[in-house]
Length: 155
Ligand SMILES: [Zn+2]
Image 1 (cartoon, rainbow, N blue to C red):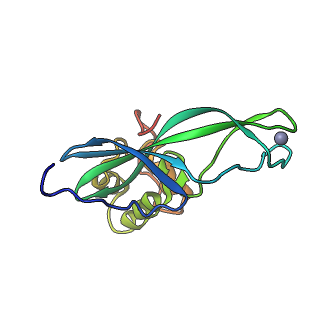
Image 2 (cartoon, rainbow, N blue to C red):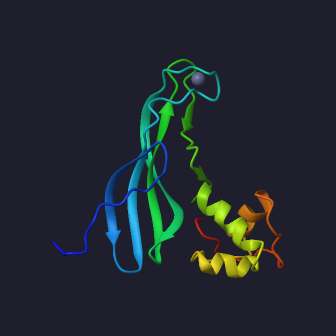
């Protein structure tokens, strides 16, 4: 084992780390799952849903030591034991395909630099499209200067 190895917390609530999938000088990819046991059915409010299957969703997070951080969220899909509907779980720390703290940082950065520069700073691919730009608009930041182009992160 290398001599510069240490354990580091993500400081994300209700998240359990399953594995570190990629750990390179440029990128960190961490597989996670929610620690919320059983969410309430959004259709009927029943609390006894069972896990139907699990899907993986990439969530961008704040960079660590200059490395882009991606969480691979093992997102559960539930089947309601009462009404039979299926639904995907949500997570209080994630908003779309990024963590809320990254969205907040983007908004804060966009108050002092352009949206494009803020997105570049956080290694997001398309500052003008529906990815970072849409988050900034929803969160009250500066609106994008140009219409959407293409290839927004996370599509
Ligand atoms: Zn239900």
